[in-house]
Image 1 (tube, helix red, strand yellow):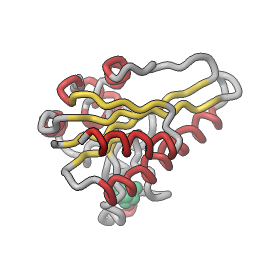
Image 2 (spheres, rainbow, N blue to C red):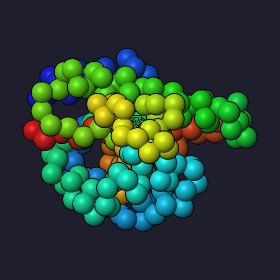
Image 3 (cartoon, rainbow, N blue to C red):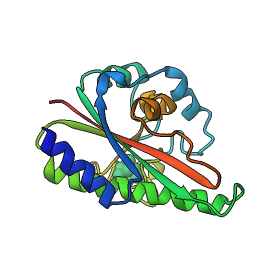
Length: 183
Ligand code: SF4
C-alpha cells in the first residue's frame, strides 16, 4: 500500500502537482453549504455538465459515499498570475489543473487495482462542451470527474488536514484534487 501511494504521489508531481499528501479519509470535512456554492452558479456550469450539480447526484448521498473510503491522496496545483487582476491567467491555471487531473485519471485507471473516487475542480473539463448541453449521454464516462465542492467537501479544511496552504501568496491561484481509495 505504501509503495502504491509513493508511486501515485510521484506521478502526480511529475504531472505538475505542486504538493501531494496522503491522509485518512475520515479527516475530510463536508457540509451541504459547499454544494450551495455550486447552486449559486458563479462558474456558470450549474445544470450544464453531467458531473456538476444537480446531475452529479443528491448531496447527502454523495457525502455518505465519501465515508465509504479509507484513504485520500490530496494534491494541489499552484498557478502563477501576473497580478491579482489576471483573469486570463486564472482561467489558464484552471485549465492546467483540469489537464493535470485528467492525465492523472488515465494513470490511476491503468495502475490502481482497487475502487477509487477522483474529485477535482468543477465543470469536469474532459470535453470542450459537455454532452449535457446537447441533452446527450456522457461521451467519456471513464474520464468524467466531479468536483470536491459537488461532494460537499470543505476544501480549505482539506488543505489544512493535508498540511498544505489553501492560499499560496500574492499572484497565485491554487486548485485542489483528491483521490479516495478503499483499502
Ligand atoms: S466527460 Fe464530457 S460529456 Fe462526460 S461529464 Fe465530462 S464533459 Fe460532460
